[in-house]
Image (tube, rainbow, N blue to C red; front, side, top):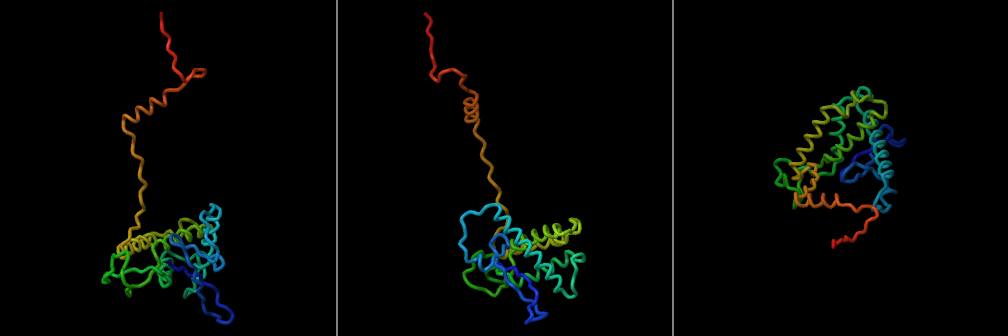
Length: 218
């Protein structure tokens, strides 16, 4: 599982020093959990309202983390001056907290999904974590008064970067990020279709018996 850092203001004992509080996230999205939440047993099913609440809480934490990153930037950056290039700097900065092994071209395990031994290849943020993070920040930007046409998280450079990370990690890790297509139901053969339609067309008239009556003429 990858780690997404949450930047916090320096304490009084360490004025001017940035502390990093690491938030663990699940496999599909960077969902932060507190220590108290980690000790609670996971329920087998969760309600839509609970999922929405977790998403909103994580989106708020991500937004606060990015805002702290801008304040710690040298020189400090305002949100109005933030561009796609600054978003790319933020994503590359997060790589130091990654937990996903990404093999290099010279590594013997390049393209191996389950390496049999450790290697010195670097740890990076997984593409899925970054993609989910950008989606939440993009929504948070507009919810906080930003215009869609000036949204730095939707910049073309950011989309291209995420695509490059996806393709590179897919080859290096030997995994596929392609979405599985849903199988369409096979059409019924003509004989079955005609028989089913004939059954559907046959309906009992009101007041009639289900037993067929025969009348013989003398």
